[in-house]
Amino acid sequence: MIDHRRLGRELELFVSDPLAGAGLPIWLPAGAAARHAVEEYVRELERRAGYRHVYSPPLGKRELFELSGHLGYFADDMFPPMRLSADDEFVLRPALCPHHALVFRARGRSYRELPLRVAELGGMYRAERSGVLGGLSRVRAISLNDAHNFCALEQVGDEVREILRLIGEAHAVLGVRPAGFRLSLRGPDQRYVGDDASWARAEEMLRAALDGVDVVEVPGEAAFYGPKIDIQIVDAAGRESTISTVQLDFDKPERFDLSYTGSDGRRKRPVMVHRSLVGSMERLFAYLIEVHEGAFPAWYAPVQLLLLPVDAAQADAAAGLARRAEAAGLRVEVDQAGSLGARIRDASRRRVPYTGVLGAREAAGGSLSLRLRDGRVLDPMPAAQALGLIGAVVASRSAGLLPPA
Image 1 (tube, rainbow, N blue to C red):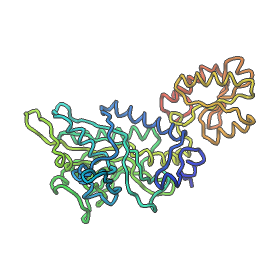
Image 2 (image 1 turned 90 degrees about the horizontal axis):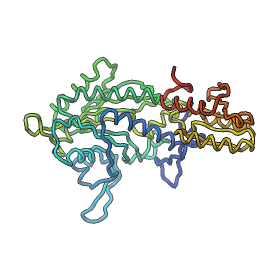
Image 3 (image 1 turned 120 degrees about the vertical axis):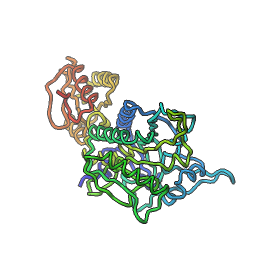
């Protein structure tokens, strides 16, 4: 069985250290490089879709989370408040939505601004019990690809369908293979906020947006403030979890007294749509490490090109070519330690997409012989052409190792 924890150690992507604490993995340079590439892609996708990115603090005053309902309905999953003085208690946030509600109410809003799409890759914290923690798949410090779309009621259906389209686009580029769609509804014994009429309306809106999609309805899995669409994945051990989600919320706009001025000049209440295209970076990479067996697509591989001078005489040529590759935006390393055969085997172990061998002939002629991760060896070509080939694959965010036809 492929286990992301084992591959994470072997490929030096992340480490868990008892001194850092359980459920608090540390991303090593290779893992951080891959994560950064994915984060930039997601931000770019969101920008093109009209999202506005913000930064908000990972903690807030106790009163913020009392107002949002988290302390009343979610306290068992939160870290205890931190008291700085008799009047100041702060809480590590378990969700980003309270801060994004404050973004919306920072000034008056007009119907012309809706839907207002507020996005953030932000930190949140869950007081998970030690027994459920594991690698990157279940952690206590979570980096969530989150957004909250503030809509007029009549915009909700189109907004949810557009979110589902964006989720599909992101999954296709990253190599995520969803296992199914779930409509998570209230359960008979579940504590929740809001009135029955609002819940029924939200449930019907999500059902309508899922028209034509094979979906399983699951009572008892809703958020405490509203129903949600959950897109499921299955890990190498056969465990199912949620990677992407869309949630409707009529409650927080009431709690935070959010409003906008309608076309008739009247004050109206928006609907808050919670959504995550790819979930948390931690759970996403736990899945991606396993589904790709550590061999990430070239565009988010930690090292995209590994240069191997045959001997010391080609060291300067390799260093110069590495500088050119870096200037072209590629992640490149030069490996001179050990025999050429051992270095080629190490490149294969590290799942590097492209290995460039520089012998005396290549160094003298300014060419490069590329070995692909899948075992293919390309004919020697001018170094500029080799860098252009790799750059074209990276720019296309293709799953293959040669430029798309």
